[in-house]
Amino acid sequence: MKPIWTLMAASMVATMAHAADPVNTAYAGNAEAGKAKSVVCAACHGADGNSAIGEYPKLAGQHASYLTTTLKAYRDGSRVNAIMQGMAAPLSDEDIADLAAYYAEQSVTPGAADPELVARGEELFRFGDTAKGISACAACHTPTGGGLASAGFPSLKAQWPAYTEVQLKAYREGTRVHNMMNGVAKNMSDQDIKAVASYVSGLR
Image 1 (cartoon, helix red, strand yellow):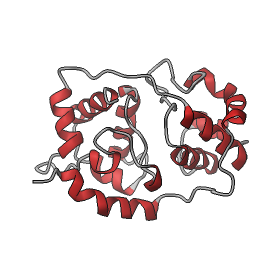
Image 2: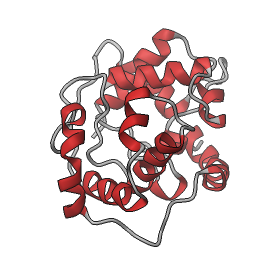
Image 3: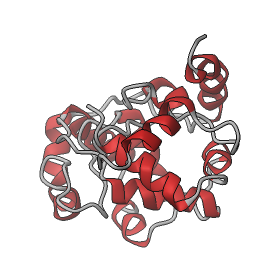
Image 4: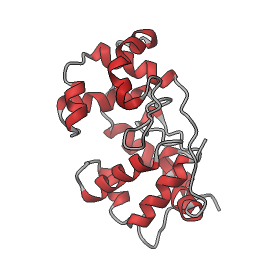
């Protein structure tokens, strides 16, 4: 029998591709220009997009399309974060494309999963939990956690567990709005969230 993620992927990709914010394709972004512009981002996210502490996400290796959409969401206020809204407000579409191109070219530093959480984290990530109504993360984010740029699914692999936990709780509580992710997270316990966040941090 095929894993749950393979059976769900086609319909989820189609739905998310339609729902994802359009990305400006007129200008693909210049990574060298983005490197210069990233200096102000380095204090939180590291010079190469690998942040030093778990509260700030790693940007290295993230899909340019996702980074572009996210920065535009901060800029227009549809995604709320006081620090990031202030940082994104003065950015032009070209600035955003350049930053996204730069970070997408960087290599994410490997993370490590807590051995005590791996079993439950892998179960949730790969297969979900039908009894609790939790969909498999791999359906959208792929078995390796690399995501799918064309559908707007971000890469999760090697991300700090602390950051992933905060985002999943925000989805669960509705303070971060995304129709699919709100539905996935609403039935996750704190321990479920901790386990899957730890598991994806160890993906390579």
